[in-house]
Amino acid sequence: MSTHLRPAASTIPERNQHLRRYLMCRPEFFTVSYKINPWMEPSVPTDTALAVRQWQTLYDTYLALGHEVELIDPIDGLPDMVYTANGGFVIDGVAYGAKFRYREREPEGPEFMRWFADNGFEVREPLAVNEGEGDFLLVGDAILAGRGFRSSDDSHREAAAVFDREVVSLTLVNPNYYHLDTALSVLDPVEGLSNGGPQHANIAYLAEAFDAKSLATLEDRFPDAIVVSSEDGAVFGLNSASDGKNVIISPRAKGFERQLRERGYTPVSVDLSELLLGGGGIKCCTLELRK
Ligand code: ARG
Picture 1 (cartoon, rainbow, N blue to C red):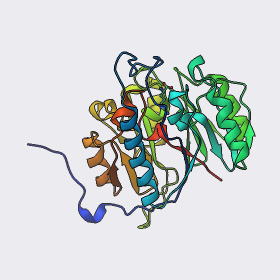
Picture 2 (picture 1 turned 120 degrees about the vertical axis):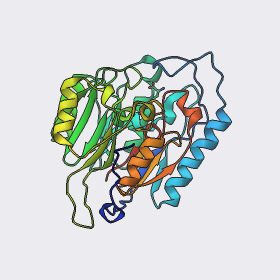
Picture 3 (picture 1 turned 180 degrees about the horizontal axis):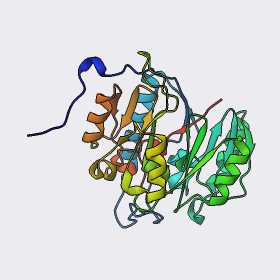
């Protein structure tokens, strides 16, 4: 018999939506022509039209929920540009630029910086290799920062200096989860429950993606976190976008969907199966523009 206890309906907290401003890039030139992560298989054909349709659903979903979405023009020959999360990291109108680990994506860095400058952001040019919001996530006043595969330790120090904030380095150990946003999702950067519940931030993560020390840090800082199953992690369930209430997730992340409902969130499924061929999902296609 199952001993799993479901909270009674009355204990499910009510969540507050926060409207967001995002940057996205229509995947008009999406394909997989090189391999820089284990998900990419250049020999497997891609369907660009399908990628665009799936991406459009995500775009439409954000608008329907009331969010604002800015667009950067896609560039022929830069098939990964659709993953705008890697284009920088933006807090309080300051955009810390990306400096990509692999040559194939290097030209994207200056393109995103140009977009930020043209759109009124104060741009900080990076000296250190870093892949933007793929590896930097804002939680409360602190920045959680991924290391191990893409973003360098120097970039953690650089981000701390640029934003004058605490940076908590987390070490990724599984190549399938090579960016922090593939292994950890910020559900509410400042959890403010309308029914007077706990006031701290809320995250979800995949334990096996982290080394023991990072795991201990996560357990210590986020005792209420949702810990997802390997199955949900493997379908990029954590590569999701939350507005504090609605959480856009992969339709395949069934367990995570249930865990979210139990915590009072509203899961909204959007299928980006075609973009998963490039090793990216919902969050990868979404960069938050914080004013
Ligand atoms: N093909 C891209 C790369 O390997 C996918 C990036 C996914 N982005 C992310 N934020 N996890 O760089």
